[in-house]
Length: 221
Figure 1 (cartoon, rainbow, N blue to C red):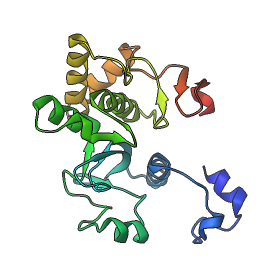
Figure 2 (figure 1 turned 60 degrees about the vertical axis):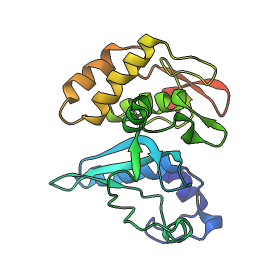
Figure 3 (figure 1 turned 180 degrees about the vertical axis):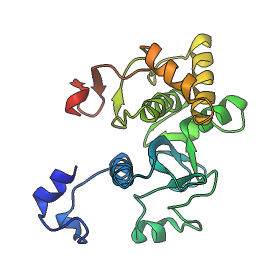
Figure 4 (figure 1 turned 90 degrees about the horizontal axis):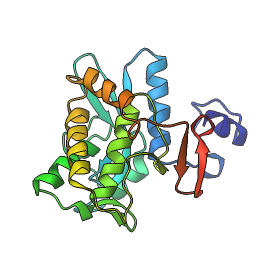
């Protein structure tokens, strides 16, 4: 990503660039760059996949943010939000230190929908939404917690598709996964063991890029 930025404009990275000198990215790219920068400074950081509750009224929009450890707690920070977006979205909170509920990790959205307190159709992006979409992000969040921060459109393994009806066993599987990812700190050993043992959840050598409509090697992503 940084190579792409420098190829467009070789100026130092701390020099602000006009829009025509910037590289295009999505929330996952902002998240990954933030994680890399924080980790390089010795700050524990991790990517989380879920849903931003501040982009459209009464909707959870497919989104990624960074969580970093400040010595006391995990801080939820959305490094994508700049002054222009902050004004346009009329945010009334600090995007770099979000209060609970502004970003829902995929497991939180899953549990709310399974409990009947939220509508699965309200979670997704563009014309795609539903419990299947939340389950896909749940698998991506598990991967990210295991240092495999995949593209938002990478599909693999146990991820259901829009036309799929999730079976009772599938629902139980995702119920368990949601609980683990929500309690990632307390149950990380269990979470890690599940990721390593379950081939439907673990990132394989190749994944399906839903944008390019083709299988791709993970190392080339």
